[in-house]
Image 1 (tube, rainbow, N blue to C red):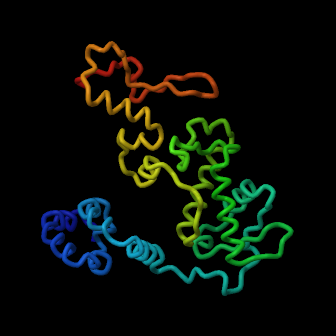
Image 2 (image 1 turned 135 degrees about the vertical axis):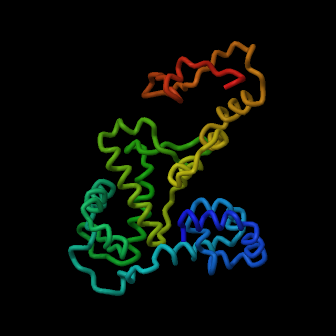
Image 3 (image 1 turned 30 degrees about the horizontal axis):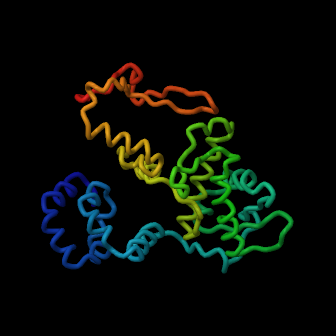
Length: 266
């Protein structure tokens, strides 16, 4: 359904499809779901998709995600002892990273069973507690993986995360946990910046996305765009200065950006 010829056909007749969908939006989930399975087609109908109730979009997502998969309810069926994630409560982040990295991915998608070392409890209550604790640990400053943005409620990857020698393994683990939470409908208490969500989805970011990270910087960028800077003598280059543990470092925004002046023309 997403062959080049089919996409070309839909694009050619998208006005007709939009008339159908606008008249009865729910058919986009029931009969025109191919529009949701191709990014190029989805972008043409995004305004209609966004206007649908979140519940309907969520239901379609999980139906699509779990179609053809075996029952994922692990609570009501016997659990193989080898499939239980045995973690230590006092080192939950590190021990969870270790056991999840060794676990069978296909089985994790089917269901999760967690037990804390030295405790007998199991079941969905323990799984929810595990996800809740990990969601806080992922953004724990001690691991230097994420930093809080200017709004105080969202997080973004820490540009200095390399101070933690295990940061790449931990980032991979954080992605696994968030993916499993999404797969199993588990709530996590983490909110990321808009620009980071765009990176995850492969959507290009723009300067307006900077506002949630640094409002003052975004305001300055907007001023530069709105005004002629030719005669102001700002001597701006395509580079930024960043604080790396107290030392300022210049980071080029493009190859050789540190020696390219920003002008009204570029």
